[in-house]
Amino acid sequence: MEEQSKHRQEEQRIWKKMQKEELQRLRSAQHHLWFNVSAYLLISVIEYYLAIVGHSQTLRADALNNLAGIISAVLLLIGIFIARDTDDDDFMGQPLPDDLTQSGQKLQLSRFHYETVFTLITGIIMIGISANVMYTGLMSLLGKTKMDVPQPITLVGAGIATVIMLVVWWFNRAGGRKLQNAALTAAAQDSLSDALTSVGTFIAIAGALLFKVVWLDGVASIAVGIFILTSGIKIFRESSLNLADYFDPKVEEQFKQAIEKYPEVVRVVDLNASYNGNMVTLDVTIAVNAHMEVKDSYRLGERIEAQMRRQFGIVDTDVMAVPALIK
Image (tube, rainbow, N blue to C red):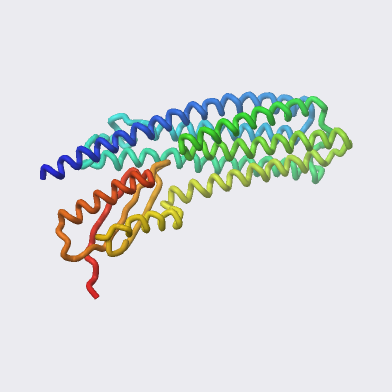
């Protein structure tokens, strides 16, 4: 009994340490996303104003694309804010226990899902904006709306957007890699797409001005819409898979091979890994010698959990031992 009590205390100490580290990463990710909001807001205002003054549908489409970036960053900020919430009550008014035996760890892990939920909503919004952009461009090509050759001032807006978006992309990518944060990784993918669309916008406007081709502006706006759609679908797919508890089978196989190296493990019967925000948890069932004592199987499970944490950074591993079938 005393041994179990010491083990629970040690587990709680380790969990609090990992929780603190994850919360610090989320706090740093918030700082990155506030920078995103500022940059996207500046670009959107400049581009939209110049699009109206300079009569450019492509620049307008790029401004709406960057507006999606603002919405995306704000939603991710909300998701991270909820994930970082460690107050006493959850959204249902239930207390958040600090003791692992009362599932305090499980409840806190569930909060980290909100980051993924809002990342998924970001993907949906990007898909909606892409539909609007492509529809507007298509209507102009079909002659439903008036088309004009863009004014030279629109090149300035596209150039400013390109430079700022490349800075934002680099900032997000570096932060995502350092912090191992899904929200920043999604933001980096979004900002890279935005940088490419801004480059495409610049080229399209320059081409329309140089060759006096009216329809090129509409075609370019459709191309921008396709870029937005592609990024939105990718973010939506990855987030939905995480929420559906999908995990890369190749990585799960690595977990399985590491566990089966223990001589006491006859085989891994079942293994399921899942994401809680950016944190990975693991449920595994192992077959052991039917005559193994309970205390030995318990200690084996603790050794496996410690290795999974040390080797793969898995925050929590639940190990169940079952007797191996005698052939």
